[in-house]
Length: 232
Image (tube, rainbow, N blue to C red; front, side, top):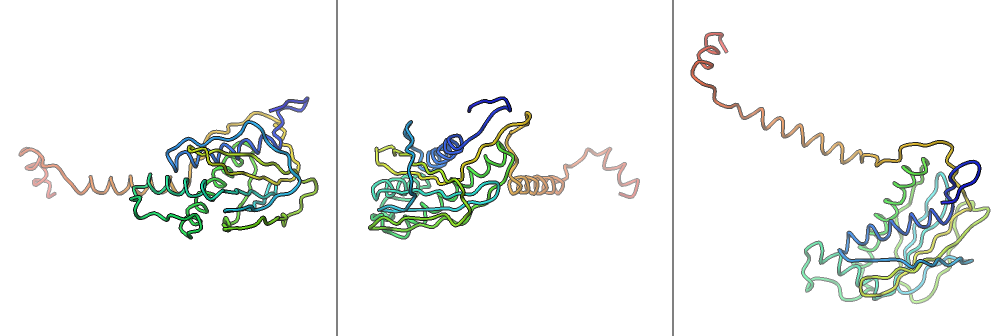
């Protein structure tokens, strides 16, 4: 991050790095492999879906933009296979072609997790909120250019190359309005508890307490006699 007289500045490249880290974090956990991205980023003038599989998500709120992931067929199939195998699926039951609907569905699910992880970090670290739509996956045999249906006065577009464990390549493209976040004062950007997880934990504690209350340990003879004498 850079600094100026007003404090810490969080700009386009910082947002891009955060998004790239969300991609690697989610896919590394999902596939149980090591996925990494290039240290070099491309500044491009157009954003679009490219063969073999393209996926895009729009976001809006504190700032607006478009995220695209373009997978080669081999990269898409590798990520799908390793994700399903890590979930315990036998290899014999997996799709063998990247054009399968099952491959697109899994990549769409992972894309949703990636952008969800990114929006969570935006909420914690930048103290603003962005919302996303459902990812759209398309199997393509030619390039499709996209325009962002949100007001981008000064759009900035970037492309980053990613490499799978088997060295297959896929690309992330980000279109976002030029923006900077300037820290006015320090704040705690610690992890925010997930409300659903908190509710599940509370319900589990209640169920555990109820089951323990239902099991009343047998007391000794003197205690039993005292309770009976009190009519209990």
